[in-house]
Amino acid sequence: MFKNLFTKEAPKKMHVIAVASGKGGVGKSTVAVNLAYALKNLGASVGLLDADIYGPSLPLLLHTTTPINHEENQTKDGKMIPPSYAGVKMLSTGHFGEQLKATVMRGPMVNSLIKQLFSSVAWGQLDYLIIDYPPGTGDIQITLSQIANLAGAILVTTPGEIALSDVRKALHMFELTNTELLGVVENMSSFICDSCDKEHKIFGTEGGEVLAKEFHLELLGKIPIEAKAAQSADSGKPIVFSDKNCISSKKFEEIAKKIHTKLQNKTSDNLENFSLKWQKA
Image (cartoon, rainbow, N blue to C red; front, side):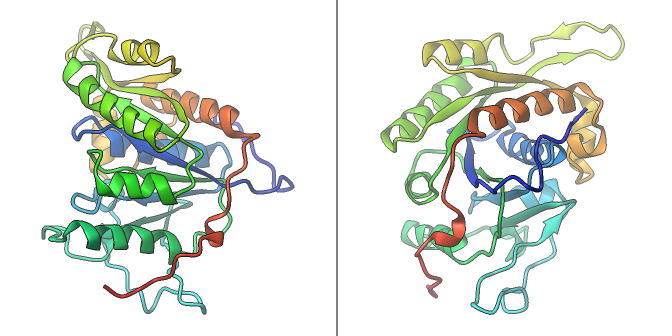
């Protein structure tokens, strides 16, 4: 399991991947985090950017809530060095403030912050940078799609029609910004009862298949609801990191392999080439 698909001799090709849904509550951040660690388990060098300015989840999902001191953690040219957790570089606005306080910021300030996150972070040589997109299709999402040089986007949905309606809007946004759609992940697809071993479709049925067929996309995988995965997330350890043999881990491994296959021959520019500069608001 998790056979190394990368070699030290192979040249680095940076692929920036958006993980988006258009709405909250579908487990998008959990998918982004576990995809990042599944790729890392396959031998990739991976970075993870939490772009949800108003509701950052990364510090909570990985229990990395210690604030980052920008002045102490920077390169000679003033770029920020992202912290690393279990082999994955990461950054979130949740690392810069108090977790329980709301981010009060207008649109232009948010756009400026998003640009700074790209131009001012020394990510180094990565195979993949996973961006956890915030919910919605507004300024932040459009700015990200325009400046991030995305290799593609993964759409996360739950099976029900309410989630699908918002995911369709996110899909339309990526089409307008000429972003390739890599496929669909159906999260919370079913719940398997521990005592009866029956599969229960508690959030609806076949939503991922419906979306994939409607827009001629690949259904990358269906992630079930597992108590073990939820407990692992609460403890700050992604399920692919804490238990590589459970159903969810195997599903994430399959998704990671599919993404790697899709992008292995596609080259994206390294983030070090961005010309944007850090500016104080």
